[in-house]
Amino acid sequence: MYESWFEHVWPWIKVSDVLSRKKIVVQRMNSIMHYLETKAVVYNKSTDIVECKSGLDSRLAFTNTATKQIDLCPLIFNEHAIHAVYWDSMEYMRAFVVVHEMYHVAIDTNGGDGKSDKAYLRAYCRALAHFDPGAAISNANNYAYYVMGSYWNRREKPPEEQHDYGFWNHHAPDEKWGTMSTDGAVASIKYDNTIVMFIYRDDRSPKAAGRLYYRLAELVNGHPMLREPVIVREEKHDLQPEEVLSITRPSLSAHSLYFYCAYVDKNSRRVTVLESTLRSVVGNIQYIFTWKNLEVGAFAPPLIDEKSNNNPAVSFLAYRVPIVFKPAGLYCVYVNDKKSLTCVAKLDWKDAIWQEVPFPAALKLPATVLTPALVIFDNILRCGYLGMGFLNLLTYTDTTRAGDFGVWVRDTHAPLKMDVTAFALGEIKTPSGPVLVAVGVNDVLGDYYVYYAVYHTTTGWDKPNRLSTLTSSGAPMLTHIDSRLSMFIRDLHGTIDRRGT
Image 1: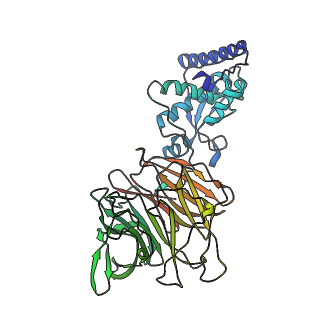
Image 2: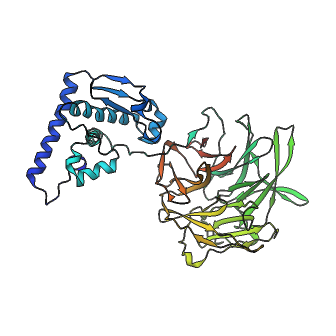
Image 3: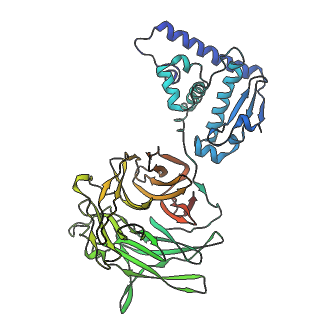
C-alpha cells in the first residue's frame, strides 16, 4: 500500500532518501491521529458559493485554515451526484473526504506548505508515487487513498472510482412500465399522445421458439398508461392471422406511424421483418395494430443448419431511414449462419424488393455472434458491432444517383473499448450539436452492470462510464420520447425501468 500511494522504490533511488520520505509520512500520519485524539473537529454546512464553486468544478468540502474548521459543500449531501461522479459507496466517499480534509487541518495549518492539492484522480496520485514521491508525500489525496485503502483491504477491495457525466436520471420513480418475461426491444411513435411499444418473446427454454408479444404504454400528461400484452399475429391475406414464433430476441424500430419488428422465424430459420400499421383507435384510448410480412426472409440466407439443434446467437435491427437520407428506405442488419455481418435494404422507390448492401471485404470484419445495431446519427446511418472487446462503428456513405445504394466505410475515429455483450445506440441533440450514446451490459460475466459512453463527431468516443447502482438482465433499450432519449432496462425480476437524458 505504501509503495502504491507514496513511493515506488526504484533500484537507482538512494535508500536514505526513501527512509527520509517515509519518516515524513509517518510523522504526518501521527499528527493527524494526534489531532483527532486531542481536539474537536468542527464541521460546518457551507453556503459559500465562491469556495464551493459550481458545475464541473464543484467542491465537496474545503478547510478554513484560519479557524481549522471543515466546511461541507452542498454536493457532499447529494447522493445521486456522489454516485454519478465519484463512487458507488457513500460510506467510502464521505470517509475519504474527511481524511482528505483532516490532512489540511492537521498539516497545512501546522507548518505544511499549504499546497497539498497537487492531484485528485486515482491515476494521477499513483503517478506521483511512481515518478514524484516528494509531491506524493505532500498531497492530501494520496493520504486519503492510503488510509481508505488500508482499511478497506481488511474486508474487501475498495470500490472503483466512477467518473460519470451524469446526464442519465431516473425519470419518475413511481412510474409503472410493467414486466417482460424475456429480453426484448422498444420503440415509440407520436400520435395524439406518445405511444411506446415493447416487444418480446415468451420463451420457456433458451432453445425453444416462443410467441412474440407486444404491449403499449400511452403517455398521458407524461405518465404511462400501460396496456395488457397482445400476441403478435401476422396478417395472411384472406386467411386468419397467424401467431408469430421466433427463435431469437426480436428487435424494433419506428418511423412515422409504423413499427418494424425483425426476428428469425421458427420454421424457415430466416430473417423476417413485420410492418405494423395503426389500424384503429377505440374510444381514443386503445390502439390496435396489424402486422404485415415484408418478405425479407425470402432473400436472406438460412440462419441455422437443419441438422443442428443449437440456436444461433443472432439478432438484428430493422430501421426505416428518413427521406432526408439518401438512399432512404428500410435497412436490416444481422449476423448470418456464417457468423458474418449482413445488411439488406429495401428502398422506398423499390417497393417489396430487398437487396443486399454488402460490407466491403477491405473492412476485414471479424466473425461475430453478438448483436449489431443501427442508428441515424447526424443524419447518417451508422452500424455498430462488437468484436474483441471493442465497439466498432461503420458509416453508410451517401449516394448521388437515385435508386443506388451507398457504401459502408469504417469510422475515422478509434473504436470504443467497452467489454459488453449487448448494446444499443441512440442520438442526443445538444446545443453544441448531436452526440451519439452507446449503452451496454455484460450479461455473461454475471455482473449485469450498465455502461455507457458518448461519441462526438470531432473527437470520437469518451471514456466509458458505469451507471452506479443500475443493473440489467438483458440488452438495454433506447428510444426517443418527447425529444429526449430514454433508456429502458429489464431488471433481474423482469420489471422494466426507465432512465431519461
